[in-house]
Image 1 (tube, one colour):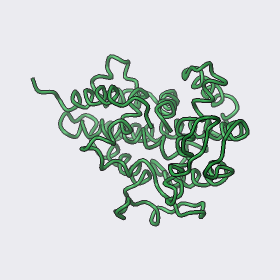
Image 2 (cartoon, rainbow, N blue to C red):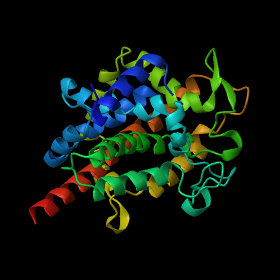
Image 3 (cartoon, one colour):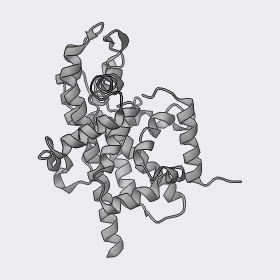
Image 4 (cartoon, helix red, strand yellow):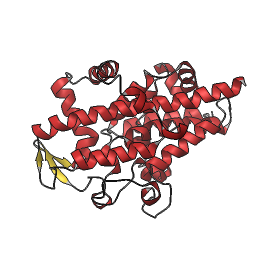
Length: 302
């Protein structure tokens, strides 16, 4: 029996979930970004996303969030190693700014191979391809949706735009309380894990509900500006990356030199940044997908 491409993709997702335990935002961060986004999907987006998800999602209620870590799960497999450079963009030491033409390239200096380039690319794919196609284009759109959703999380993690010299904090060895780790991992996983234990009864759904409540109340006036892109762009990842490197300099790198022990002071002052970036990532992912699929609906009805 031959598997359809969407069935094959679903089987790869299940296999990689079994092979990889702890995932390197981490799995909780990506789930949070996509779960927040789902709450802001318009009707056309809900229908389009459900069509594009792998067939294995149909038994899970068409839940995008469950698949948002897929690009992390497959990037170490030989056939997907080409995607590794698309999870981040390195910036020059201590410049604390980002420029697409200067910074968006891989280690071999291939232009456009970085997280912002990937967001532009997969946004274009979803905009230009036919949602109703049942051929290879359908599989490409499934892949494009999952990559875009993941990279929108990555670009909002400040150290995914960190300095090239320390690989976005990966070579800065620190202690998170009593645990030896690196600074990048602190921002991918440790701050979220500590928040879950300290404030949310070790429950990710409780943390997501708290962020959703803040979006309805404390952040409600900020949401329209988070959603918008200048010049009517569908996505504006250059803006997101510029915000991230600014935050990396002001918060992630500050007081976190090699050998430092990071504890309550660092955790309590950085957690609001992490939570805001998770919320912004979700709001902006929803806004991009709403713009893509509402435009498609209008074109189809023309």
